[in-house]
Image (cartoon, rainbow, N blue to C red; front, side):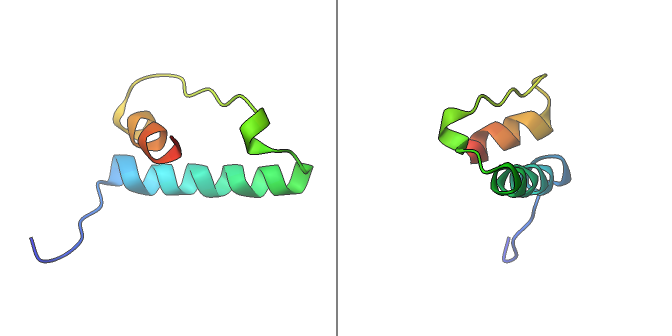
Length: 54
């Protein structure tokens, strides 16, 4: 394909989740590397988020 295609359940959801996490860490002045983040379930959205996050 000549154009970029985003899978709605994965890339968009992962981007929104990570943007929210980054903002939350800034607001509470916490270090993300010293925090534990749990993704519950193995559906497409969580798998995409885990791939982007790690």
